[in-house]
Length: 396
Image 1 (cartoon, rainbow, N blue to C red):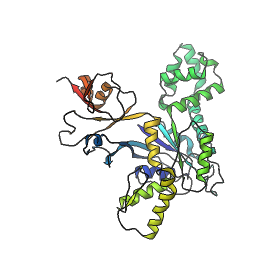
Image 2 (image 1 turned 90 degrees about the horizontal axis):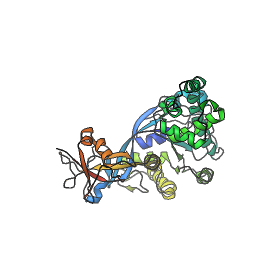
Image 3 (image 1 turned 30 degrees about the vertical axis):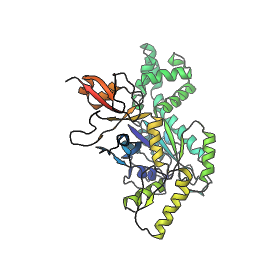
Image 4 (image 1 turned 30 degrees about the horizontal axis):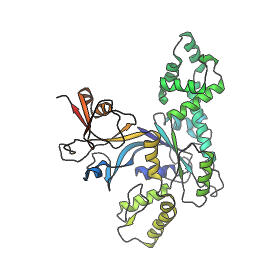
């Protein structure tokens, strides 16, 4: 799984990326600070299964704090996109193509309206962040259209001459964007396009590109700079304008500050929490900054929003669930580590899917599975639930 972080320059995109990954990236308030894509690991948060068994886990990957398990996810931060990116402006084509393998996108916008369409600083509230949502949708749609149009006339003739399966042909044309035959079939059906591909006009191709983009690159909006005064009104306007979109207010600078203070042992802070506690004496300047975050972000929104954005894109948008391998009689591995592993799998995965995820040999030798919490035996078609702890029984 790969999550792409996108947006125009100077929205706080790189700050967001650093806040969620703690990766060392260049941050500055001017366009195109990021030129090459940054690749790092972030962590989604779930309630750990260890609490249900009155024990403490020992994660092999990620970490656990106060029975909150943090699971690794790959993230990619590409350079800021500007209007005309799909036509190559601002090196747009290169930046868009970096996103080919992304499963979903986090669109970081400046909720305060303090950066214009080019990413240049302006007076807070003078620019409408609604434009940023519309602009990125447009550029991504045009990006898909560019790839779809590439050699389209020759492609359409070949499909006709060979009497080829149009869904398979479309999937092949856009295979780099993870368009499958099933997705292509659903798109043609949803848009009520003709089965005769050469009858499609430019408007049909545009609608097809937009639909395929929405399915293969689902997106969540991280409404950043929520701590600035005008942000709350802009958030309401965004939610009214895009009621179907998932929009989460956040403050990347606040999250980065809290994690920095926790790293220095000044405070105790669990990412995603709506509070923190002091663990050491701090200067007046530090206390004022932390109290500002507490009053203007944590008390207003319940958290900085940064952790919620990543959790939501993986668990709600992509619909992944977390499954723990474990035994009814023993939760430890051979080294004594309790519940060391946890795997993210697509919702709808079965016990047999999980067995194969553990190892091909385990899947091939599958006999049955056991729900460790209920001690109930289940078969290979049993649908797993989020936070299940499962023991796989195999042939010896």
